[in-house]
Amino acid sequence: MCISLPELPKRKGTMNNQQYLNTAKTAAQAGQRILKKYFRAPLTITVKDEQHYNIVTQADVECEEAIVECLQEVYPDHNILAEEHEYGKTGSPYTWIIDPLDGTTNFAHGIPAYSISIALAFHDDMVAGLVWDIEHNEMYTAVKGSGAWCNDVRLSVSSARTLPQCLFSTGFYYGRGEEMKKALKKIEQLLTLGIIDIRRFGSAALDLCMVASGRIDGYFEYMLNPWDFAAGKLIVEEAGGLVTDCEGENPGISPSYIVGTNGKIHGELLEILQ
Image (cartoon, rainbow, N blue to C red; front, side, top):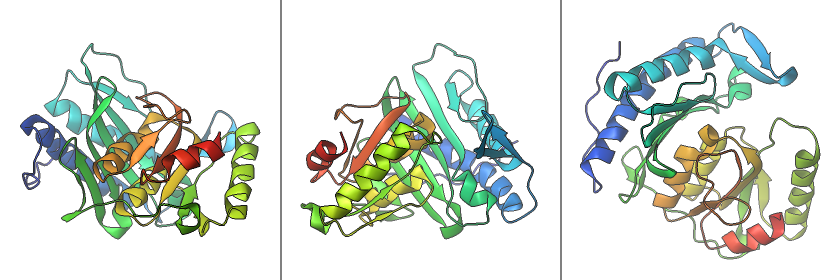
């Protein structure tokens, strides 16, 4: 059973979308209690797809169950798209997109860089999103058309306009083949072009929130699942930035190559990454 939390402060945006965000916050709180219980505690770790580095823990599974239970209590007809289980289609135009623990490898090693990510899409359009950096108590939120926030601070992307002004982050998909090799080559190319540096945080959702907050100027990863980027995409866009696939198009809610930037260097970065 979920415990209802006080509603978030009302901000500009449709009432329904604000209510969706309030529900996401309640669901995230249910998941947070589970993650805090397991962080730096003994974990049962299994692997996915026989790849020893693609891991899942009981924290991932139990957190997802708690989040889904909360969402389905309020919106039983909505679709659920989540990392750890498949859920049947309902026919609704609304889909909750959930990563119960983004940064599982960090979590399993006791590294305090992981998050809960919850987004709601209407068809392929994100209308509400939440990413919670639990260890730093930073909750990033956005409702379509109402801006992006970290706790009670409104977010804005950086002002960098040239590559030498930019700090980027990246990640690597679980494949260790051509996509990884291409990413490493692009990192070398960007460093050669004189960017400030590259960071690797291990949580795509938090990477995108760092773009939204102006802490970094851009982020790219050659393959992500929708639960990795859905909430972060809306948060970046509501902070004034841009998130696309490698062709500069909306990735929707399908697995995709993702590029997120402050918008000012987006085209130049896309040209380099292709």
